[in-house]
Length: 440
Ligand SMILES: [Zn+2]
Image 1: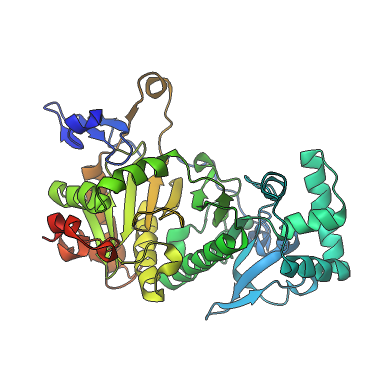
Image 2: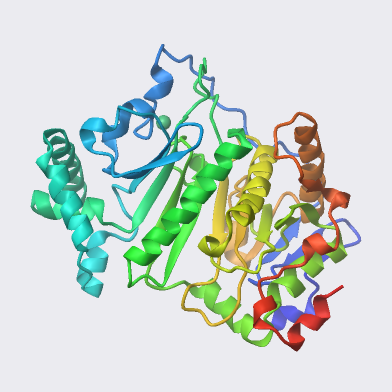
């Protein structure tokens, strides 16, 4: 590998930091003097909300339940009790803390699976479609959605066909209850992941893990289910209302191929190339009993990487406590990031049919710059915050948030993180001599 000759991260005499992504080979420079620019431009003048407007700001808001596709599931009340497939005439009867439904405009459509893979909906979805259409409120709901889709896609399937596509698609959205804080006066009082309580975030995350398992078992032709969260428009979100997306795809993409090739010769790839590097370079940010966060090296944008340290690979193979450990760290990093910074949250885990062990990790990127002509011409990415500065900011912010009681108790921050916290266990079951190098 050509980049092997270059250190993953090095500071030049003038202060320029050069990085090479250990898994991607991406070249990133941080140029001195640019690190102290503000993270976000000030927002346009916040707009004062009319009474009740905080519940109908966008199609994901609580007063507009029937503007999304029929609900696959919702979580209700302080215990986050799950209600599945709530009929259209009952959606107003309870308040959903989180809801899951099919994306009206899918990236990979139901038609894709039908036409390219011969996928047919199972009887449970056909029965649900019949029930939903038999209900007058449900029928009207689906007629409206089918008309919107037909307009946008220039095709006009029957209502029955359109219903099956809307109910049985493999691109889901998970939406949080609040667009802005309860009682918000202005439209910029947004609720990001970090504004949730640690308990709400844990419910959100485990609801997403359950949805991932659901989609994987419902779509036998899927090689992978991509899980991500775009926060704010510069990060690709169409609504400033907190939501995650899950998209089944029939290949897992070139970066995963690259990692699987690297894993074939080193099952402890992530320990050796990421965690050991982070310890050696002082880039470990925080840890819980079950997860560890580092400031990532070689990302186009400043990025945190949160690794599950559990032996499990797929998110849904994790115990409730192991999922919570990941959730608490992801939540804390969102809180430390701040509500007005655009972010992408991306999940990585072993594709179910892949042969090598791979840990579950969540990458949180700050979308505070736009790669432009320099990057296009050179494939060298200029990032305004180097990993050491990212770690310094995060440790300071997490410490303040902990003092304020805003993040989950029990998070070890900065130098409180122990060497054992940084040991990944995903390859333990794979056994063997490969483990020896990392058992420090
Ligand atoms: Zn909304």
